[in-house]
Image (tube, rainbow, N blue to C red; front, side, top):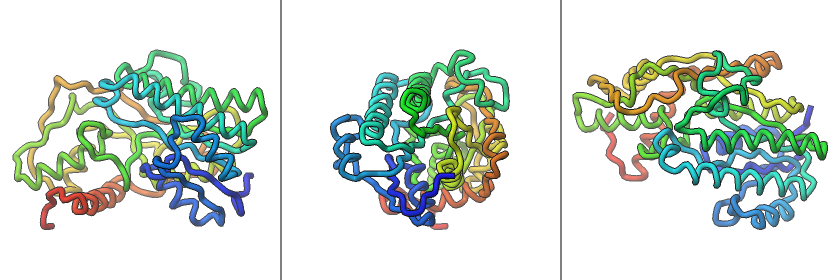
Length: 319
């Protein structure tokens, strides 16, 4: 067990949805949480990261920083997603090793697995088949992060580990329709259709792909659990263990938001991977399980979105 008491832990990417959730979770661990704003440390620049780590002297690092986005963003900016994420990873791993930081947790993504991997997806499915073409660039960068952790462990004996979360949502998510993932995009679409009094809301694709979702606070709890209790070369899946068709998810979002119109399908748009359900058996066998039900988490996320929208002067309903 890795005792967090009294440790200095740098959460790289602390302003993101997962990073901010990790910061909240660490508040109860009697440790010192280190953060750095983008203006202070550009994570894609090795010199910046080296200087910060040397000055801050963290005992452990949670690498939650990444350039992220949905299908449209990934397919439109493949070079950015591959190049920038590789730079972040090599900068942070390199600085950690150079400054003798012996504990690092790398946060990956479920898109690392083959497009048609057997379901539910076990950790051993990595590199057993072709990736989903629309986000393969991001996936390759995340696979590289896993291999970096394994390489530093093998060559230098570093206690670096990796966790692969399923699709996440929650406070701090990105609701920009041009770059967001499916769930925040659905929340915003349903909300705007409700405010406008629109009779319909459009859903990309056929609505049949199945997806698994986990609240960011549950993910953060799992990551801290792994940081304290896990030490091995294999990455570990982090999921809820349940999935549902995108159309059913959209209907649940509409119920939570209060949009009573119809959902129309734009079948000209891509579906992405047909199904992506993680096998989180390793984590569950260690004694961890999620606590936040999907409908409860969606309601809380929508409330956060309304609060954020008011601050940005985005129209919200009177309810």
